[in-house]
Amino acid sequence: MQQQGLAELVDARIGAFRLTLAQELDHATRTAPSGSEALLEGVKSALAAGYTAYDRMSRASREPAGIGGTHLIGLSEDAVHPVREEGAQSALKACGTAPK
Image (cartoon, rainbow, N blue to C red; front, side, top):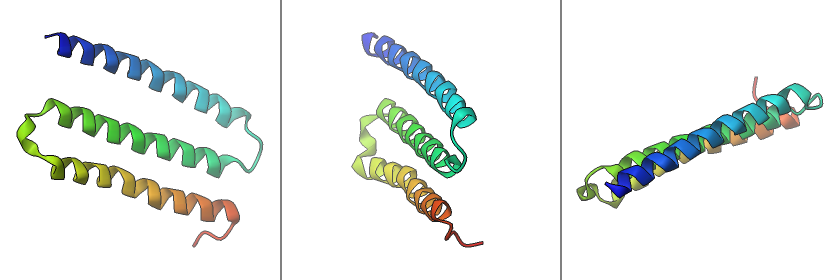
């Protein structure tokens, strides 16, 4: 029972952190100098992938222990792959060499 209460507290704190971070990123997007859009989009994409990974790991930790490590490895790979792709595209776009 204590573990569930702790999980709820952590989830609430992480939710508040996500909200604050989203507000700060919105402010940064509005006030950033011209040309920094690709960087900010890369940050937003990386955060979204991190949130997805956290949510999946959090759900997996609440499932029965019989699932095993291979399930968790698959979840982490699913979360990391889009970041690699988005990061590469953002870097190419920032350099002006992205495919049209």
